[in-house]
Image (tube, rainbow, N blue to C red; front, side, top):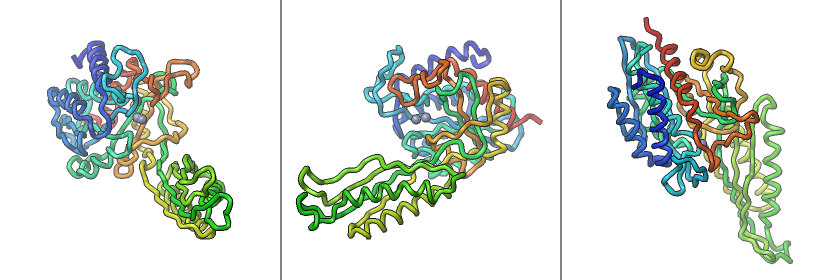
Length: 390
Ligand SMILES: [Zn+2]
Ligand SMILES: [Zn+2]
């Protein structure tokens, strides 16, 4: 089956539809993990399950080469109700593969099956199937379970489908390719009272307003203009009423950046501004800053290998190494903080105007099956480039 591209493609599409019909969300990818790992085991790979919960690693060793690389796919679906009408739409209420991770798994599975019967490399490939990418906790869970100690890898690669890039294109860049995402919650404790007598209160609404404006000076005055950052306050909640000054205001929001240094700066300056503005008004402040996603920072030498594989699989005219970094986040960045590697975006958009393609995380999204074999071939070529035969 894996010897014949047309037969392999039909089989992969059928399996992709199976996965799409049965989406499972973060750390609940039990059947998904079983389905893929059983197929890999049947193909002769050495499978190790239960790494980071539902995550697993499948090893394929060929020849005598000592070198080892990793190829990673994410497995989780979204908590979202599918509105599309494809025959293979989700059969699980409130869950759907809205980010195309079903397609990611299938392309990597297809490549593993092809590499097992037509090996073009010498060494070991570890196929890493990761849970819980969407909440940004799956890669960390696998690390915590000793992924890199038990299964050392010299480099690791990943890809994500991208409907806003032209069909069949390979898109990557050196350095930052996706942003960090941190969340914050600022609780401002004032003193509530009658709306007619503000002199007896400490109005947390006024303090919160000053804090929000103060935070907006960090990107313009503290972050190096050559760097990039976003601070967005997205919610403000109080316990006030129409005629009552609240006692408490809670501001929440999210920040993005492309380097751990900028992340540190944002956290430090945000804390200082919040604490000092609150103190100036006599209010108390509780500042909570949570790091959710690390930035995804591609390594230069691995980008070159990714591009070389792209040229072989998709053609030089379709391979780009100048991708403008996305402010979206991806927990593959966790791997790249430990070992060299590269993330790549596989273009799947077929409309002339890219924004007319159904976007990721849209309730009508469905992974584009026509790209499957390009993805398989990309992974296949990457194996030969990273682990060449002597
Ligand atoms: Zn997603
Ligand atoms: Zn995704």
